Image 1 (tube, one colour):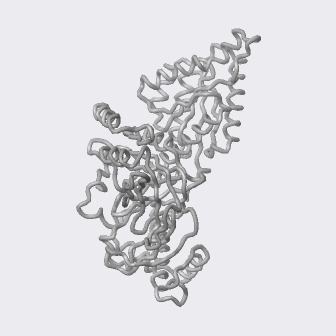
Image 2 (image 1 turned 135 degrees about the vertical axis):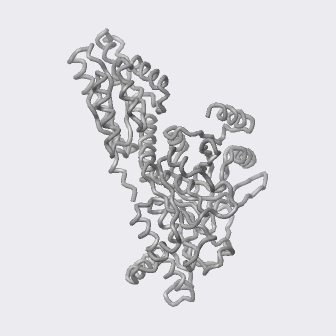
Image 3 (image 1 turned 90 degrees about the vertical axis):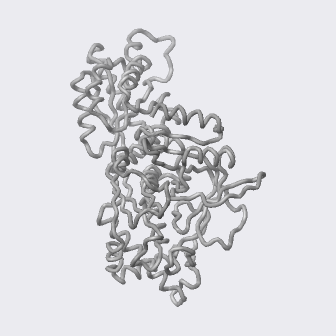
Amino acid sequence: MIDLNAYEVWFITGSQHLYGDEVLQQVESNARELVGHLNAQAGIEIDIQYRTVLTTQEDVVRCLMDAEHTTHCIGCIAWMHTFSPAKMWINGLMKLRKPLLHLHTQYHRDIPWKEIDMQYMNLHQSAHGDREFGFLTTRMGIPSKVVAGHWSDKELIREVGIWSKTAAAWHDSQSMKIARFGDNMREVAVTEGDKVAAQMKFGYSVNGYGLGDLVESIQSVDEVHVTHLLEEYESSYILQEGLNKDGMQRGNLKEAARIEIGLETFLRNGNFTAFTDTFENLYGLTQLPGIAVQRLMQRGYGFAAEGDWKTAALVRSMKVMAAGLKGGTSFMEDYTYHLDPQQSAILGSHMLEICPSISGGPIRCEAHPLAIGGKDDPVRLIFEAAPGPAINASIVDLGDRFRLVLNQVETIAGWEAMPALPVAYALWKPEPDLTTAATCWLLAGGAHHTGYSSALSMSFLEDFAEMANIECLVIDRHTNVRQLKQNMRANASYY
C-alpha cells in the first residue's frame, strides 16, 4: 500500500542569460548528466525529474507553480550551476509550499589547475551562485535542506535519498486519514491533542467511528476469505497447539482472521492509512484486535493503541520513509526497565500490537488471556526484535506547538530468554545511557508510545521535523541533561 513509484522530485537548475546560449546549453547538459547519475544510485528510490534551466523570474514562477500543482511532484531540488540572481526566485518561492532541497555541488569535482581560465570560472561557479540562493531562502525564512559536496559522493547521495523519501512521507501526510475506533484511554494526558492544530501543521485528518461500523464490516466477511487467511497463518507462523485445526482455541484464531479481513476492508473502503483502537471500547468485538493490527502495520498502515492518533500518524509516516529499506518499523511502548548499572536496558513492547517487520527470527502465533479488556483471549504474533541500531520517536502536543523527541538506541537480542512473556518485544540500550536518556525524555515530555524503527536513521525524522517546521529534540551519545535543558529554553523562546 506504499508505492514510491507514484512520486517524483523535480530538479531545477538556476543560471542567467548573461553567459550566452553556449554556456546555457552546457549548463543543461551537465544538469541532465547529474540527474541521470542520481537516479542510477541504489540509495535514491524516488524518481528525480530534470526540468529546464531557469534564467528569468517568469521561468521560475511558471516552474514552481507547476511543481506546486502537480500532484505526484513531492518536492524540488535546486542547484545553481552558475550565478543566478536570487531576486528572480522570490515570487516563485513564495508560491512553493512543497519541500525544498538546496543541492550545493558543482559539475567538476577538481580544479583543472593548468587549464583553468575565466571561461571555466564563469561556467563552474556554484560556490558563488548557491550562496546567493542560500541567502534568499534564509532571508525568506523558507525551510530547506542543504546538502553539500560533489554529486558523486556517497554521503551526498545518501542524504538526497533520505530527503526524497522523507518528502514522500510528508506528501503522504497531507492526505492521510486516521480512523479512531473508540476514544482515547480514559484519564490519559499524553495521547490527547488538538486535532485541528495537527491537521493545520501535518495535513492529516483524524475522525472517530463507532465500533458498530467496524463490527458490521467484520460480520459481513465471507467464510471463504476466512479459510484462506487461516491457511496463510498456518504457512507463515508457528501456531500454538491450541490454534491448530482441532485445537481448543481454533475459534479464537478464526475470529482473529475475521477481524483482520473486516478491519482492512473498512480501512481500504474509507481510504484510511492509519487507525487507533482502545481496549476500553470493544463493544461488539469478541477480542481486542492483535494479529490483525500487527499484520496491517506490516502492510504499511500506521497504528497506535488507546486512541493515540498522533503516534498512529507518526508510525504511518515512518512506514513511508522506510519503504524498501532493510529493517522494520513499529508502534512501540517503553514498558519496563532492567536497571542493573553494569548492563541497563529498556524492554519495549505492548499488550499485543508490535509489527512483525522488526522481527529477528521465527514468529509464533498464540492466544493468551489479556488481563484487561474483559474479552476472549486475543491472538497475537510473538517474536524478538532483530538486533542493531534503531530509533524511537515521539510527537507530543505542548499546547502552543508540537515537539518531536528522538532517541538513538541499540537493540540487543538473545540476552536472556523470557519464555513466559506472551507478547512481541524489543530490548534496547538507549544512548547515551539509560539514566541520561530517560531523564532527558521525561524533561522533553516524550510519550510512552513511540514509533520504533530499525530501518531509519535520525536524519529522516530530523528532515521531517524541518518540513513540518516543528521543534525537534535529539537524544543520542552526545546528549547531556544540562545542554538539553538549555536547548529547551532556547526553543521555547524561538517558537
